[in-house]
Image (cartoon, rainbow, N blue to C red; front, side, top):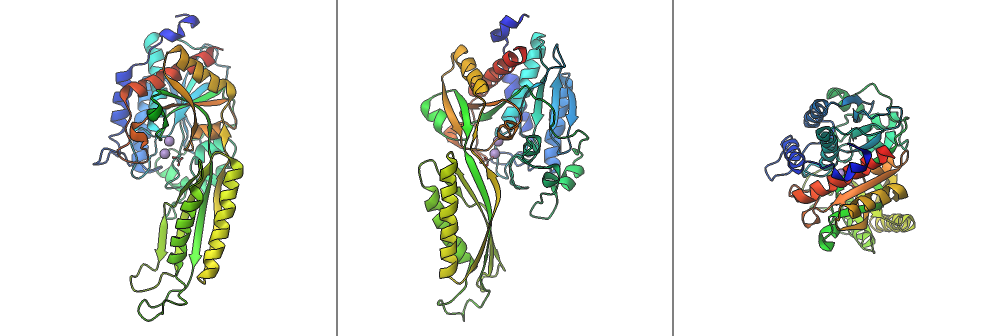
Length: 413
Ligand code: GLV
Ligand code: MN
Ligand code: MN
């Protein structure tokens, strides 16, 4: 088939859907979602299935030192840098079938479809699986694509710990995905990531394709409150040093700070000690996730939160320690890659719109070292990070078709 026939290359919607559904049985939950936490045995099983499918599709597999997997389909000229796609296979504790998995399975379907058509691209193609995108077991999120993108060092990634004190490196070894390849440091021609939108905009606007122009910024915090443990019955309300009250007041303040145009604010973890119903909590650990597409506004949120925490601490006799453990600046995607996604949607006659990602994605870190773009498809009621996360088969297929188009055109350019 000649290069001009790219628009005749069709992905197989049934095969893509069936693969997604089969993958979702690994860690499948009663409510129809998936719990496949990074670097657990279930993560290994999901990776093993992906690797088997890629080998069956004729790909060569490589694994790097942070467990990123690369499945390569050779091109006509293998001296050219690969055109890459991919996402993650780890999920949230109450995750869905599509977040991450869609991008990986869409990449595999591109390879399978090209095999069906006996189509050879100029540059090789690669499908990647990035380790620990979610950041729910090991903070921060997108750890391993961060090393690939040169934002984190290898040692930093391997030394992250989970709440039980297990390091990323130990867990990686345990599941046998501590590969030999150096992380990154090699040219990538372009990277495209397909993902469900995880928000309500495409569905509301009745568009099939989101042309992702940028991702919003994030700041993640770990906050420790210290007060004084004392007797619930004998300590007067006046003068109590209740660490949990400090946390509660900051949760309400953070919510108020997030309630600005395009702001987001979430407290997802809170642990009070000593966990006794008749002792005033003396210590509290909490997390905070702030997001905004405008970096200056995100910095203002930071300042307002720190001022609020200091005021609460002084009013209630508490100490507060705020550590920003992750800063992720707003990330614009490559103009050419964005235009390629838009052009592919136009050519396919699919309703599309430009959109800014509210979530973080591996593509944001790969964007540090390669021209990068993203393709969004709608998800039901805009719900994600929830077991009911759902998407329409037609939309999932449409996004994959756009991915194929964008990758093949870039590989032949
Ligand atoms: C990743 O899932 C994020 O929190 O944006
Ligand atoms: Mn994701
Ligand atoms: Mn996610």
